[in-house]
Amino acid sequence: MIAIVSESGSLLLYEDSQIIWSAELPEIPVAISRANVSGLPGALVTMDNNGVLSVGYLGSEPHLFKVPPLNLAPFEVEKCQKEMMELEKEIRAGVDFTDIALTNAASERDVTLLIILDTKLERCTYPTNVNVSELSMCQIVVTATTHIKLELLQICISVDPSLKCSKQVFMFRDITANHVQKMESWIYPYELTIPADITINISCSYTNKQGITRVLQKYSVLPLEMFVKPTQASKEATHKVTLTSHGSEESLANLFPEFISEGTPHALGLLSLISGTKVTIVAAKNTNRYRVQSEDILGIPLMVFSLIERISRRSNCNTNQDGKNSPLKVSISSSPPIEALLEEVDKHYNLRQQFSKITDELEIRAGQMRLFERRFVVKLQERSLRALDGILMLLKKNHNGIAKTYNELKEIQLQLRLSQIHLSALLNLCEACFIYSDIPSKYLETVRSIFVTPVFDCSDHCWEEMMHPMVKFLSQNGPLRATSGISSFDEKYVFTTDETFHFEQFKRQLSTLFARIGEKRSKTGRSSADFEEELEELADENASTSDWVSYEKQSDMPL
Image (cartoon, rainbow, N blue to C red; front, side, top):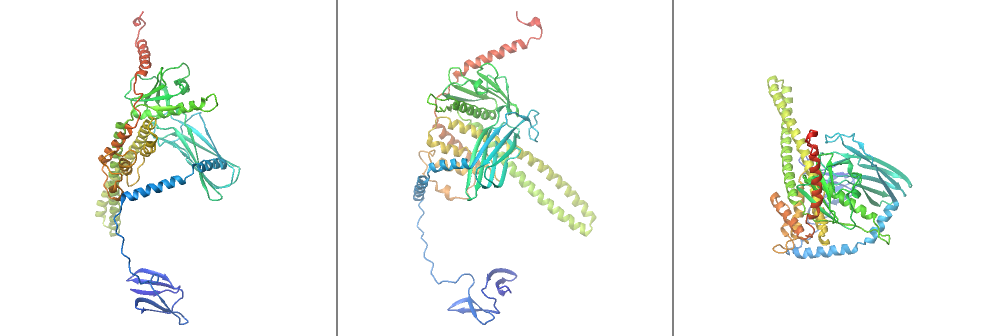
């Protein structure tokens, strides 16, 4: 080991040709040596121009002490869990929700957001993955009025993963008080699938001159005619969801006035402009119940959420005699589509495995391409023409393989993105079936934590691998844990970090968790007798229409 002092006063220690330590000296020395001082070996003695000696050590000044014995008491998991629960209670007790309300009110006084959604649809002019000529786009205008000086203002528009914004994020700096900023964006369908939700979330985050950051959120709903058009209703369907409105009866003409111009029909058929899926909404005559049915389960979530939103909006228009709003409660009595959800989970996981396999293959081919290129350069320098022909053949063959693998990767990426959207739609539908079914309030937060959307995959782990720890934890802890046979805290889960993911085990735990949630649901209101009369009338209308259409000659018509 060699010690060198530079002209700037830096002490550099080298082992062979590699530096392993560096330090700054208080003075630039003219000589340096190693000595034993007070029985401590390894002291560095330096002398400056004035002959003053300094004694130092590598790093900090050493201390003579004895390492105390380690406390190897066993770790008590139950005690730690109890302590954690007590800390959570203290944290919750320290949160004042009145302050949150005041903070939100102060945020609205600082920045005012005005959302204008143009109901006049325009023909879509942006590139999409949908090969349909009838696509429409909708313009949204966000106006932000700042009443104080701001350092930063950011507006973010979030939509369903199957939709896209022409411009999603707006950012402004150094904004003066009483400043009005207007932002425009176009929203249009992008993927070849029905959106599960047409709600727009506008988030406004700003930082004032004191460095305090606040967030405002506003919501709006896209026009439904942007995605569907009226068609003839269907009598039978494979998938059905029944909703009950606990309040005043609302006809389909009041709920969907843009599709029903005259009369008060009890059945409405809607055809998707994107995928061609047909969905029928049937309203019962005697009860405030509605049924959404379709042959494609992916067409139901949009209609269910639109129906819930319109019933809730109509309820806000109804007021009591005292002038207060009377909120209208909506419940869903149908069973959630667990089987369809698990099938989509299977499909998504298989696509993710194919994606990983193709990605690995592409990396191997890219490595081969770099190797062939290096060999080509070497042979070119050696002027070996015969060897160049062979390497060129390998380069072309490998290039064709890379192009083929890349096309397969793009196809898998598209299928994987559609599978993520479909899985998100089914998760939202299952969540609605659980939430709107008179489930006890103590289970609501747990249920919402399971159905987190949108579904996404990171670079190293798929959605199933990221959900597995949470599903396993909720299966063994909290209000949905098993009543017997499982401890209150899973020690292996907490302290094992290299546990291998098993997909079938994840599916079993997810199915078990869904079954426990289903046991907490209300079991009332699942009879379909209320809709039989409306469906029979619909069948009679269809039959009478088909009789007249099938006659080719006037003589064939019945007299």
